[in-house]
Length: 285
Image (cartoon, rainbow, N blue to C red; front, side):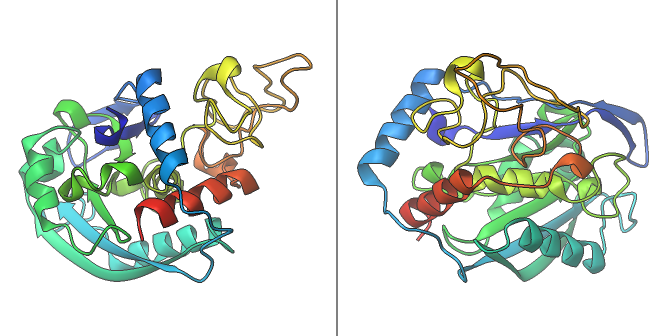
């Protein structure tokens, strides 16, 4: 079911992680069945706590630096890069959500760094260090070298999954995707912005393709994101994959919930923020 599913974001790039070069691409590692989304959305509709916004509500962030050694190439990102990432979150969610770094934990564990990924024993062991409650974000930065994590950029749980598996709640990202990282094209911190959108209940802008997008009752369940048949990459100009009078507007390639490059991502829609804040008040307060 969707409540036990994590979305996974990958990238097109090559990153040297103090070892072999790993090819990366964007995409989802976990397929979300349409019927599971319908079930989750019915639950949300039946239980939602209406709110205009949660402005001035600070989400505490607990950062878990997982490295294979004490070097930057080994994943030991400095406090300055973490601070820059938190600032990027605050810039990208300005006027809606405030993110505050509560604590940074550092663990040298080559097994977790290399092998943590969706549904792995390394992830389970790593997430045993989770802190805070359902409204607190735990971020784990790793290397995504082997196994189910190989080539990933990041993945997140959804708000509705917390009650069934609170120990799994949080986001796992590639350490070199933070601002100033070594992943070319994806080192402005927009990976965590994107994954935080999932943590707040947002789907991809291309969820459901042309048939499902552009309404509040299908696709990404946000009415003001134009329909999009597939994920964008890079920063395409004038891309419009859903044409005709039924699908006004070009593809939202600058939206944080698409798959564009970091430099291309600049915005959430008002509808996305309304959904995110309502998801937060329903499942995370």
